[in-house]
Amino acid sequence: MNRIKAAHSAGDMRTLARRRLPRVVFDVIDGGAGDEHTLRWNRESLERISLRPRALADVKHVDTTTTILGDPVSMPMMLAPCSFARMCSSGAESAVARAAGRAGTLYAVPGGSGERPEVVARSATGPLWYQLYMKPDHAANEELLDRVEASGYRVLCVTVDTAIKPYREKDLRNGVTLPVTPSPKLALAGLRHPSWSRDFLLGTGSGFDLFAAKRAYDNFADAINHIKSVTPDDVRWLRERWKGPLVIKGILRCEEVPQLVDLGVDGIVVSNHGGRNLDGAPATIDVLAEVVEAAAGRAEVFLDSGVRRGTDVVKALALGAQAVLVGRPYMFALAAGGESGVDRVLELLHNEIVRAMSLLGATSVKEIDRSLIQLPNAPAAPDAESLLGIG
Ligand SMILES: Cc1cc2nc3c(=O)[nH]c(=O)nc-3n(C[C@H](O)[C@H](O)[C@H](O)COP(=O)(O)O)c2cc1C
Image 1 (cartoon, rainbow, N blue to C red):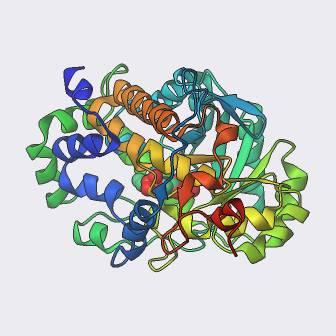
Image 2 (cartoon, rainbow, N blue to C red):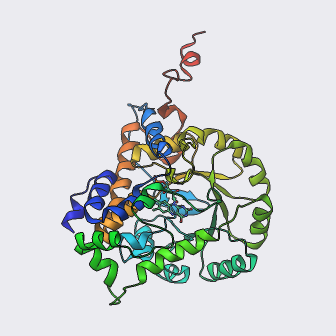
Image 3 (cartoon, rainbow, N blue to C red):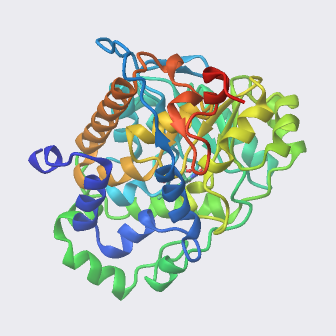
């Protein structure tokens, strides 16, 4: 699709999505909580880190492959769990799963997925994560985990930063509530975006699909309306219940890490939910190093929130992340061009990782280390004094 070929970055995908989606839908994806401080800080903190290339390295061959909890991946980047994919494109989660598989990476299917976990699993060609929002009703959690397990999901990722129902003023001002109720504002927005409305109402392959998008949104509402706090007792229960790798998503404090690792957690996602929950939470890149240190190699640490460039990926890896997750970039790509949009953004981001590594003189993911970055207000080279014999 020509429109998609004209996109040369994740930022371009956002621009295309903004044109195609009704504003109220775009805001659901793009927006953050409160005054959007955390949303901005995620970007600003990444941008303030500079890069220190090893100029004399031979970078004829650059290898971006790595592993994520034992699964081989083509690059240290995977797709974050994001509800509302059905509002971006009728292809939704199955399309994202196929695109992730083609790109050789992983997708965490959201608990608020519009499609049933079984359906997404059937479309996938690679391993999948399942993201769980725990409900107070244990029997409901059990029943869901049975289905997720039977569908062959490899990793269970439990989100812990959403103890209460999200509250986003932008959506409220736009008249978007949970569950979604048709309103004159929504209807008008649809009329102004006929190509989006056609896809939203009719879907692609399976014919008339008038209520599918609403069902998808309501499914998210169901997950989120019955959400509960996740306590150490829950993590203990989940550890006993789930035989595969267990990941906790939404950690921002090093103090919580040793207990999680002792409970048998295999992975930790340093995340502030893309600035969508607690406004004022720190940028994830600013707390990554302390979490990595606290994990002490006993769990893999991942980062999301604000990653838009291959250079951002390198910065996170330099501070100890095993890999990053991206959310909005693939959601915007889905809105801009459906499944081929997701293919395109994954290709662009992969190419950016290759270029970043090449220009930094890192020929493999293992060669990405702390010496490749300079933190704001830090000395130019942390080890310069010892190297030059000064002091
Ligand atoms: C539209 C949207 C829906 C999301 N839905 C979920 C969800 O259902 N479960 C979850 O754990 N995180 C959810 N997230 C958060 C993402 O998993 C991820 O933490 C965040 O998007 C990363 O930031 P980024 O969008 O800046 O890459 C959502 C994010 C967006 C943008």
